[in-house]
Length: 422
Length: 189
Image 1: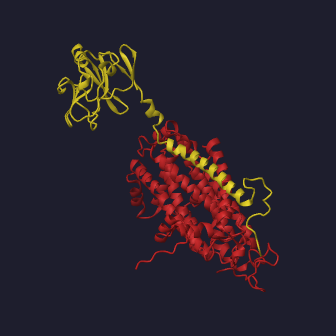
Image 2: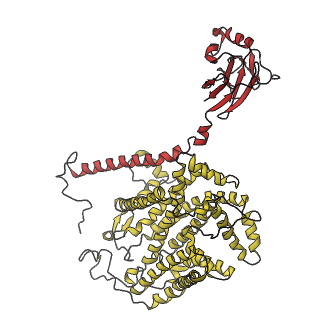
Image 3: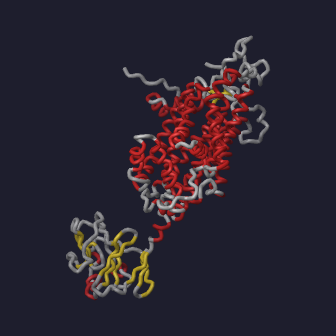
């Protein structure tokens, strides 16, 4: 006899569906009841904001794809037609282009939140790694998307980045020819980039579902880095977090709207309004701002293969981060020494970003090299050593304890253990 | 450890119903309404972007020069992606069109409703049966039994006013919106 799920819903239609496919029970459990630590700050809203940006990118991308032509002879003109002739085409294009930047802003804040509060530490290692996978997919999607308007930066950025793979001995050149579908970036390249750019966001969507699922297994982290001990430490997701995230999203959208409506080309490069010319290289080839730190690392190493390995390595260290950090304490709130190095890392990211925008010579090249050296030092040397040497600050017994006098303790005499791992 | 999840003491508020639960209902309803307006406003650009763009709309109206079309000749122009037959009718063709008994027609229409000036017939060259382009524009084409057009797909016959006379088509060839700009020039659409 086949079993149905015992559904608790009253509405007969909902109950019928839910007993056969418990999506309503699932949604209620994951987004209504889900216990969220009550002390999370607004940095916790950026995951939701990133998810909303993904939906906006897919929606605008879809209607843009209805009007765009992925052929080198007409691609640039098709984008100008969208801007001039298509109803609200200018709006959809600017939302999509600036949306990419804001998607990265949200994700970078989200990642730095994870770094500061130790959200990558046990039992959330896989959650963190899945996040790095999403980041990589975003970078691939954004790179290919930027090629599509077929401006000068589109073409030459594509040429530079695809040429990177020729650094690999023996297999390098065949790989590059395979990527190009020809002997240089040309129509076959543009066509396949369009197909892949259309596909990857849906892959990102699926991986985001895995990311959220992994999160809901361990539960959310919080600024203290201490596990929630019971219902006294948490609030139900709805209405507390839904409203908080909604408010954060509104503020984020206001900033987004300022860019879309008042400075829509500020984050872009004017050279991309020049149609691609394979015979003329722009004076300074730069990627979009969100790639600049990695671009700086790439050019900091004088060796071609070395630069490529360093750039990929910069993301690879993020994957192994949960094992690099040896500290038993999650949150930087209780790590007085490491906390300062966190800010050095943040500054380093900004400095590398700026260095990436400058020609790779003279002072800025030196700065990029120092920045690259610090980046790898921070992850590969500092984190493993400091975790063992640092003396953490005393931590409260629970999330509620510092707020409610005498509250938050389940058993009398219970103390916080310095080791806050599940 | 009793924590209330909503503030007490809202009874004094002059909300509809006057008590806390009703105020919440009002707030939910108001928020929902504003949210619905927001969703509609956000959705509109996406939906409207699929409507014809400015370049398509620009071709929605074309001008046709009639001077090169001699009496007895016909030209086909492309308008909104469809063929439009412009025939400079001979006196005999006009006579044939006017002489028809309207009661015999499947889709009755007097000739003066079909042509603004009797010597110029402008009709959309798409058979009203299933959409083929009828023959009859070229001198070598079969014109059917009524001297107009003949659709080879399923055998519809149209007369010199583009009216259906025989065959499966249910309606006359469509007369599009057009206007004479001068004796020899029309604007179509």
